[in-house]
Image 1: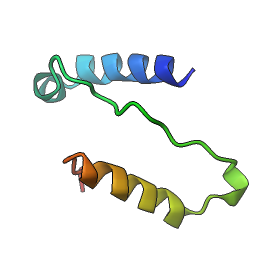
Image 2: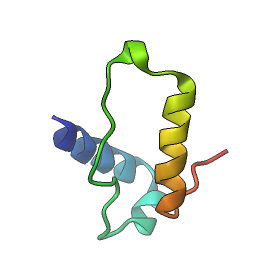
Image 3: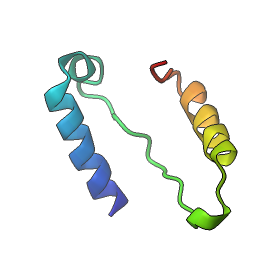
Image 4: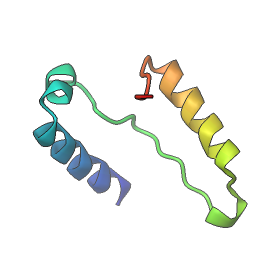
Amino acid sequence: FVRRAKGRSSRKIQQEFEHIRKRYWSQRFWQRGYFSTKSGNVTDDIIMRYLDRHTHKNGFSPPA
């Protein structure tokens, strides 16, 4: 399920945004892993820490 969602979203994003398509041409758009947990136990802080660790480690800076 996750692999299919990543593939479809990657294609849609790259079709819509040319600058992203040029940057990630012939490269992996999403990382291999994914984060999953029950929503009742996850705070915004936990999600932000997860995203911070994974975006900066891979050299990606999300838009402000």
